[in-house]
Length: 133
Image (cartoon, rainbow, N blue to C red; front, side, top):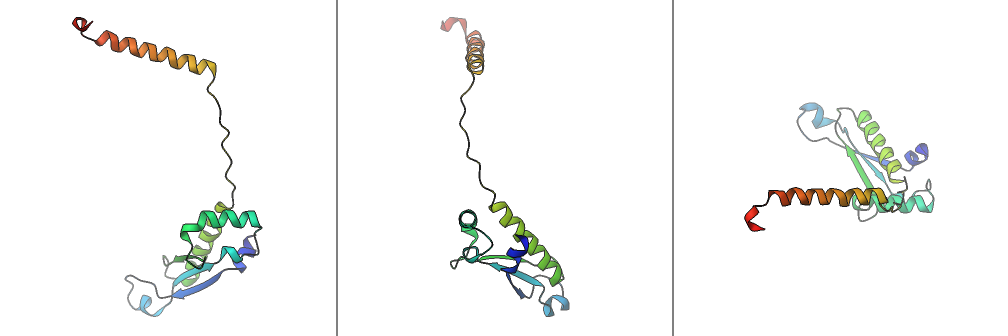
């Protein structure tokens, strides 16, 4: 699946920001990864639905995910880093959420709770001023 996803990705390069002198002024080391989950052929419909739902706020108006990296001086290393982040992000998005199965407290835990409440109430009652009773 990894290779299939990487084949659907396109990259865009630009000059990185920040200090760096002549190197940063003449090399395009910043890498942007662009991917459209709606047009992906690597995923089935339920997987696409999960990914679109979870990545919704991160998608552009055209439905394109854009990730960028300018951490390293090298375009190659920035490309590797942004690709790894992309694979990790999509993999996490495709894990289905397990539905919570509601449970009831046991009889023993209910009895313990009531007993502890009575003890606590008795402690508070003992702290009161005797003249108020």
